[in-house]
Image (cartoon, rainbow, N blue to C red; front, side, top):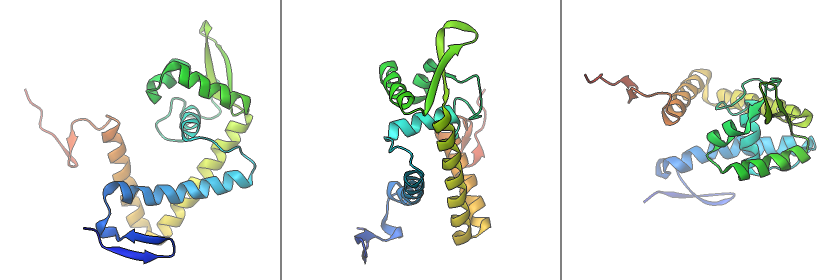
Length: 183
């Protein structure tokens, strides 16, 4: 059973007693709180998690993006977003409608196909993406200051490796070693 300690916010498990989900939640919560505070101060609308995920994909904020450059004029096809999000096309379309109404995204005709529409960040969406990247970088620098740059580089490398493995880009690797090819 995890050891409980008293904190200003009530009871919480010590680090040794937390499961992986709880350990990953702490830094995510810290980053999200800083992002929310900064974006609210700048007058950005409060967004639901699905809207944030969609904006991140369109603007290349989250790493696993459909359009790596927020200034990309080519945009992203709805079908690509549906595939990346694993949500129904109607749901993604509804989310895009909401974001378009807020001027966070804009739709435009696909230059290669007359009927298909593409999506890119709108003026407010570009400003949002810029602020998200600034806060993320500042938070990472703050954590590096607390942990030390060597530990932070190790943490980042491990998280990048884990993300690649989970997303299926790290196939052929287990426990940090290449798996033997079977013939």
